[in-house]
Length: 250
Image (tube, rainbow, N blue to C red):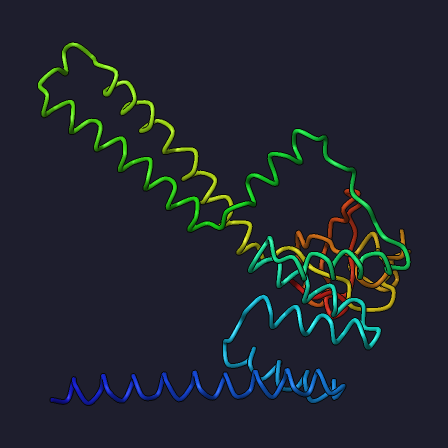
């Protein structure tokens, strides 16, 4: 009886939380549509604090920050939206528009066409999508192998067995791609410059001379951290140190 009451309590609590989030979401959208951007930001941040993460939420937050001229925060949330849904069309469009407004963009070398095609294919499915494809190949291979065993013709190495072995070998590819996609989606090293301009220094101290100035909105990769400083790698492979408070991890 106690277990039943506990289950019912959890079920009711979950429904109440879902209703509360739906209400907050509606209020945030209404405030955004009416131009009350500070209220919309407050409600969206409240949803994030409650653990409600969705690409639409980050995309909407990015749009608000973009309207307010906070380019770094806008790009940060567009990137977070694309991290949750790599093919989200609105976030892709808004991110491209925001990146065009970066004062001085640190551009990476464009990959060759074959590499770009591979990256597009790699990112066409989420980790679970690649895992499902691997499971499908494994199930098909097992079914073909079982059919051969039922026919009792293993020694003759029929076509079905060849297909079974081939599909079983191919199973490793989507498993590796799924693992790589999961690692990419949980990568905490990518970050965005959220200050108007940040000096890139050779050493983690203010007395160190600035090697370069990095504009707001540029993305980079954090490779080390020492107290209040982070060592970063820019898209052009320049490495230096910045104050940790001026960059935000995606």
